Image (cartoon, one colour):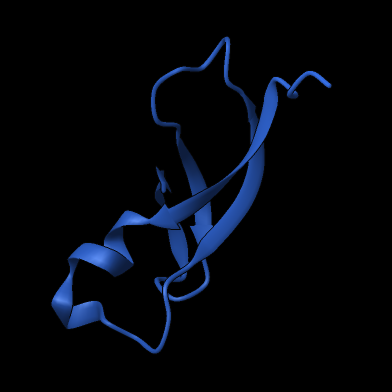
Length: 62
């Protein structure tokens, strides 16, 4: 069986993670898919963070 090209990744809010003053009970996370052949680097998307209550950059985590 061949492995699929698309993999599931997790995106995490950079504002919630890096700013200690804004630390709330959680960190905004989204799951999505990416094509590992076309997008070899880490993915960065602007998504809505429920803890910051604004649109922020979400980066791919391990």
